[in-house]
Image (tube, rainbow, N blue to C red; front, side):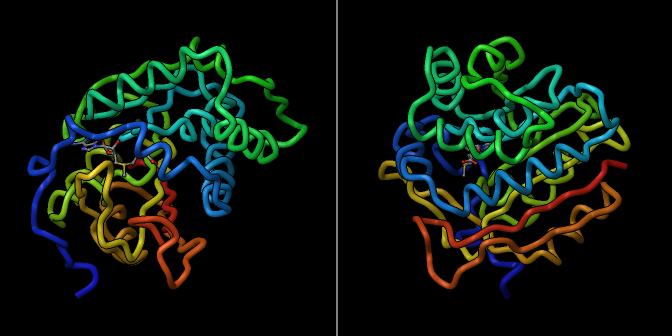
Length: 254
Ligand SMILES: C[S@@+](CC[C@H](N)C(=O)[O-])C[C@H]1O[C@@H](n2cnc3c(N)ncnc32)[C@H](O)[C@@H]1O
C-alpha cells in the first residue's frame, strides 16, 4: 500500500540527526542545479506572491530548512522577518555560516537568479541577497513537533515532514504542527518527495514516506482550506538519491 508505507517503521527519534552531514547533503542535492529545483522555486514564489495580506511584509517561517538557502531566497521579497526552524545542530551551524559569507557560492547564484526571474521586473531584487538575509533571518534550533501555534503569517516547508520519519502517524502529526504554526488565513506552502526509498547523507540512511497528492490533501484538509496538492516534475527514475520528483501543497491555515 503506497500511502501506508513506512519504509522502516522507524520514527524521527530513531535517526542520527545530530550527525547529519550538512556539506555532503548540500553537495549531493544542490551541488549541480537540476531543472526540478528551478520548478520548485517557481511554484514556491507563485505561492508567496499570493500570500495574504497582499502588499504587506510578512513574518515567515521555514521548517526543516537543512543546508538549503532556497526557502530564504523564495521568501525574502515578502518577508519582514524570516525564521529557519531546523532540528539538526549541524544544519543550524551550516546555515549561520552560509549566511555570514560575503558572496554566494556559484550554486546559490544560480538559484537566486531563478528566484529573481520568478519575481520579475515588478519586484526588483538585489544582486546579492546575503546582506538582506542577515538583516531579516534568524535560525532557531527546534523540532517540527514543538512549533508554537499561530506564531507566523506564512510558512514554507521543503522536503521535511515526509523525510524525517518512516511512520505515517508522525508524518500526520508533523503536518498538523506545521499547519497550526500559522495564523488563520495565513499561507502554507510545502514540497514533498515522491516515490523515494529514503536517502543517504554521508554514509547515514534517512527515511522518506511514500505519499500521493490525495494523502497529502487529506492530511492538510483537517488544518487548512483551499488545499491543493499537485505532482510536479515527476519522472519514472530516480534523479538523485532519494528523489524522483515532488508534490507541491498550498493552502490557507484554519
Ligand atoms: C530531507 S532534509 C530537507 C532539507 C531542506 N529543507 C531541503 O529542502 O533540502 C530534512 C530536514 O529535516 C530536518 N529534521 C529532522 N528532524 C526534524 C524535526 N523533528 N523537526 C524539524 N526538522 C527536522 C533535518 O535535519 C533536515 O534538515
